[in-house]
Image 1: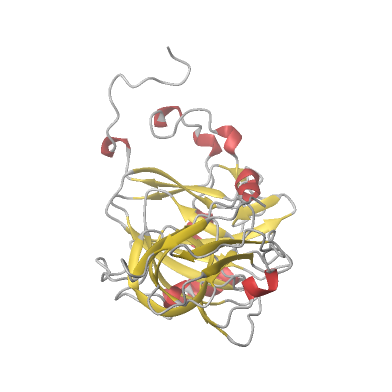
Image 2: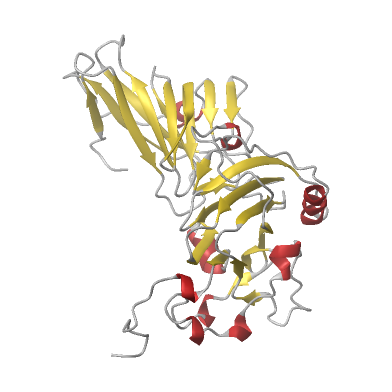
Length: 362
């Protein structure tokens, strides 16, 4: 705990509404619930992308890498200091459970009690609308969950036609570590930069593309890499790419927070999955045209928590050529190999100077 607690001073006579941006910089499985004493607020953006304002919100949850922008109306409040509450989401597998901190929303020159101690129970039991709650916990009966898939961008979706490329990605934790389709990304086999020295890439270390494209689970006894390889997803520049982020509700139901570099993606929808063969179930539903999609104004993000026992459907337009990392934002899971690389286009489409130095050269 770091004290004195931070204070944010507002002057209602000068400005009636203040904008705050909350940023989650945690590296464990540590969703954080945020609320402000006696203040509801309006959520206007997520990950820097504007959404249709969600008004009368009492609390929101941020997971690894997420950012939320809110507007706080400070008119009509008593001039005093109000507590801004931060509480680690409850749940058996949440690393910040029972941990809390506070800051102060200080009106004018009102007194701030720096001896005040955080109250964990108060931080996680705020009645009202709760944006982006951890999906593995049972919320208090007086909280109303608003998942990210229920948010709406202020922009319409540009590319509404069928996807050119679809990937089925199942996130899990096995005996060998956190994985995607039971594949561990073997970081040790990358010895030169993929972007600058693609020609030096170890082709023998590449994973079979069928696991992600066909929604298959890697079997270590049958796979030539024993399911430890370079998990690279190939798309063409200009492709409309869809990804199903599938998270079975296994013995360790962790809502893996997934981050994609180089792009924002649209969250088209979500739903439940069966316990048996969830990827095959989702692929069949998708190919039969039975997956509902918000193709009008889906929210845009670059980080999102997956749903144990469910799926998320995301989409992006591949207009930024290069190699882009996609990974769980829990540090231990990255180290273990819950990582992919999305390759967009080919070397002729990224501008590398002719005299660009190579690894091992002076």
